[in-house]
Image (tube, rainbow, N blue to C red; front, side, top):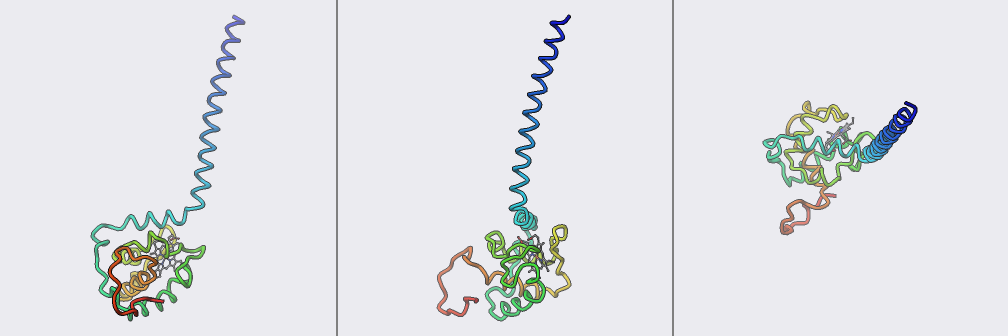
Length: 165
Ligand code: HEC
């Protein structure tokens, strides 16, 4: 009887110890994951939003593509409506991610237009459907003029003025 209960306790202890190690391991990996999450949380939220754009909307063409006047107009609109959160040069603030990130810069014009039209409301990005469509496309044109590396490098045009800065 006594031997049995010793065996029982020994077994219980081993079981508990094993459970403890498992729980500890789970906690550690959770803590690690949360740390990583905090670091890249904003960017990941934003990337997820970009990935949600329906394929049909992604493919929409920007009626102002490469239009320098639209770029300038879009730059003004950006200053007025967007710079407060995304920074005066779109480099980001703690209220909104940088729009110079590769994920944004490699997005199609249609994707950016869709984001503007629908917002990312659950993450604090307002809906801009109250801006007339042409103005939204102007902003898209401006954002794309910030491109560090164009996704489809084409032979450089003769005329240098396409370089926005
Ligand atoms: C009130 C603050 C706020 C304003 C104003 C705002 N945004 Fe945002 N925006 C956000 C937040 C927050 C997100 C989602 C998460 C993040 O990027 O930080 C976001 C996301 C985006 C995204 C999604 C893509 C990404 O990966 O970041 C784009 C594009 C964008 N905004 C452009 C604009 C433009 C253009 C304007 C002006 C018309 C604008 N935003 C105005 C806060 C704002």
